[in-house]
Amino acid sequence: MIRTELYFEFRELMGEDYTEQIKFYEQHSGILENEEYFKNLKSRKEFLRRIFILHYCGVAYFESNKYEEAISIYDCVINNITQNRENYNINLGKECNQSA
Image 1 (cartoon, one colour):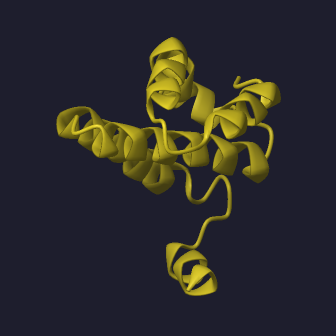
Image 2 (cartoon, rainbow, N blue to C red; image 1 turned 90 degrees about the vertical axis):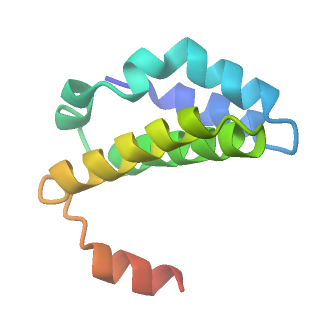
């Protein structure tokens, strides 16, 4: 299971320098992308935190012109949202409309 403190560690790294975010991803990719961990999270909040981290790691790779890595991370995000939307009560139509 992802430790909650990883989320807060990652939040501190957010900024214009994507190097630290990429290092963070490389250190924790085994935990962040593991499908079994996604299935065993305790709450919707933990699920969304994991998605948040992966999304912004994808952004870091994209902004660093590492497109293949970014696409791989985004594929992971999409697959996990799709596979776990019922477990964590995620309605993609509703979620998208609320953020607009």
